Image (cartoon, rainbow, N blue to C red; front, side):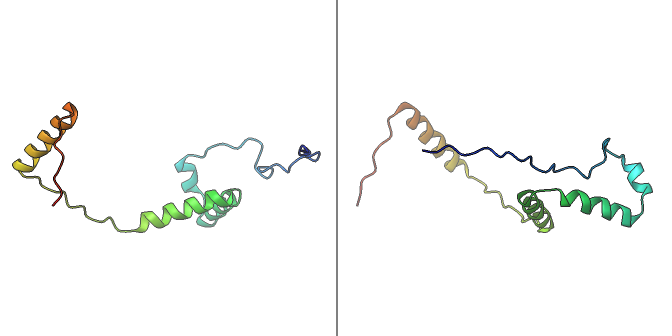
Length: 102
């Protein structure tokens, strides 16, 4: 088997167009920017993301737009709860009865 050759050329830096001292801006600082400046800032940061991260972000945005479906909780009767407790007790003890096939 042949070993794979290592790359001799350096890969291009991914964040080469970022300023040297990149820092997190506060919300008040961001609010002082114009709308076009904010959009440009967002687009430039999105352009650096990989395709997979962009796809995940797109999925999360789509998912957040969907309406929340109401979930109906099932109400168990006292008999059902008692039967479930008895089943769990027998399963723990290892004395479950085998069902007859008809």
